[in-house]
Amino acid sequence: MGFFDRNRVEMERRGIGLSRLPPGQYMTDRFPVLHAGEVPRYRDLNSWDLEILGEVELPVKLSYSELRGVGVVERTTDIHCVTKWSKFDTIWGGVPMSRIFEVAKPLPSATHLIVWSEYGFSTNVALAEVASDSDAMLALEYGGKVLEPDHGYPVRFLMPSLYFWKSAKWVRRLEFTRSDQPGFWERNGYHNHGNPWKEERYS
Ligand SMILES: Nc1nc2c(c(=O)[nH]1)N[C@H]1C(S)=C(S)[C@@H](COP(=O)(O)O)O[C@H]1N2
Ligand SMILES: [Mo]
Image (tube, rainbow, N blue to C red; front, side, top):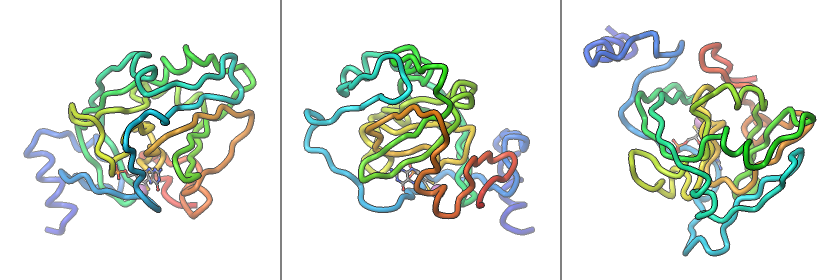
């Protein structure tokens, strides 16, 4: 029996239904760290802010505590990385994207959300899809603790219905746009959409 078969047996032993594993993936307990470039280090968050702009009624800049004040919820969800690992029942704390929409009020002209991180990294998602993923959030916590620097401290985007590269770490800006705008990985060989159930890995 090969690695993938043994892995599926282990999933069943743990009572994790195989229907939760997208095609071509395997379960892992580890939390690999993957990104291009440096991990930003913040002495404190005094000069940190999150900017929400573009096709919105109410552009706003939020401090870390203002963002937290929008309302933090906890969600348990599965995440799927294009490098083939999936991690089940991961626990995240953060501000749901539905709350962000209530704060900034996207205009009818807004079709896409471009999530911008430190150092010019970005990723693109269709607004309607963000709205339909009830686990989509700006995550502040993982496993009940403040995010580790490697995993996106202070704030990462989380959209578990798409491959994990869309879950941008170290987010600083949410830009609502009237057209699509492929981001860093999307311009570098990854699929523009990235649905793990359709194996939209590479373009
Ligand atoms: N800012 C930023 N966010 C990023 C990336 C990146 O290069 N820069 N890489 C993405 C990729 S390819 C993956 S698989 C996940 C990995 O998240 P993790 O290190 O928390 O597992 O982060 C995503 N978010
Ligand atoms: Mo990735």
